[in-house]
Amino acid sequence: GAVVSQHPSWVICKSGTSVKIECRSLDFQATTMFWYRQFPKQSLMLMATSNEGSKATYEQGVEKDKFLINHASLTLSTLTVTSAHPEDSSFYICSALRGGGRLDTQYFGPGTRLTVL
Amino acid sequence: AQSVTQLDSHVSVSEGTPVLLRCNYSSSYSPSLFWYVQHPNKGLQLLLKYTSAATLVKGINGFEAEFKKSETSFHLTKPSAHMSDAAEYFCVVSLYNTDKLIFGTGTRLQVFP
Image: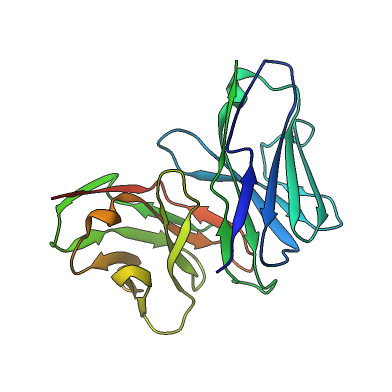
């Protein structure tokens, strides 16, 4: 099956520092990956669409300068939370689109829990 | 605009009894609908998807869902709950003509022995 990994699984950082989260598709290539944010006991909110070799597309209300996304290869997308603050604490989940055609399945990573002190 | 509404935030059943997780959708177009399950410390897993083919969709682990246009519903069912089914379930609709997914608020399923 299609496997997507995230690293790290959890991270604690000090306010004002930057944190990078990696999302990898382990057994397939993904031209498109997505980044979501999930607050405790709430649903997933799409933050941005990451396309290999081009700039990410951010959803309305998401600060592109705070959440930097780089999709450098067909198997790796990274999310960097810059100058993190306690309100950035959340569960960040990525997904990778397998197939490339519309309505192909998104495979999700296990998530990264970020805590900003 | 498209959206999904999960009618129950929490459902409790006994092991071996049927499961019903309710989801209504809103869409101006023929929607593509999904059910995903989220177990603790594991990635979201696709249970099943509806893409305008058969209205009764069979998924993994004995789950199925029926697309009812007249009721704008896409309820998830399973004849007999297992302890391992305890998890968070999300009804999801894809934004028209894109790969973007819009998630419902989730239903936590508890299964008692």
